[in-house]
Image 1: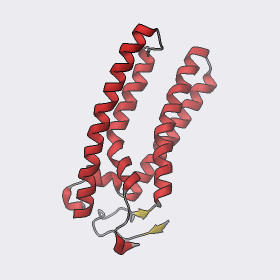
Image 2 (image 1 turned 90 degrees about the vertical axis):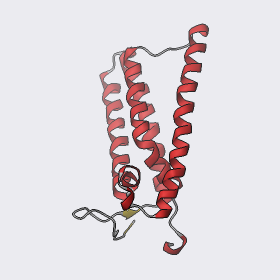
Image 3 (image 1 turned 180 degrees about the vertical axis):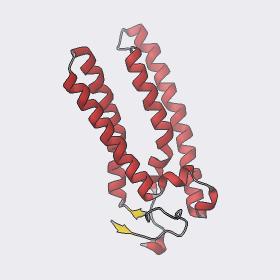
Image 4 (image 1 turned 135 degrees about the horizontal axis):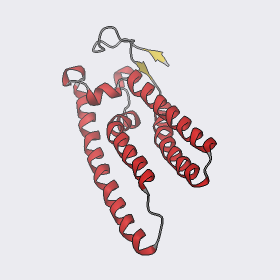
Length: 164
């Protein structure tokens, strides 16, 4: 990883880092799959009364969150999404707008599939979440809503041709 000086970085912050696209994608996958694995382990730990699985679930969750936070903050993708427009250039604004459109699609499809599954599951006697599972689903959707734009930016962003 090479360190680059960023003129638009707030004073007092360390310079932003360039992280390869493969590493960014691996961290995005680890972050989302880590949450799913943690939720499944937590569900299994409740049904099998295993404290070890519960601890493993929260350790995986903490590792996924720490990895995501580190990459999004240190690469600047978090500020692309939540920062002021004055902190990003025209290329970044255009990419951010494109990613926002994809995020709206994802947030339409997720509840649609969730409702379809719930309707089919009640008739077919499939698994339906209990209160504890619904809490994990709620926090997962909240985390997805907060991180999806940054994760999509990390997934698709390529350096401009003049910086390669």
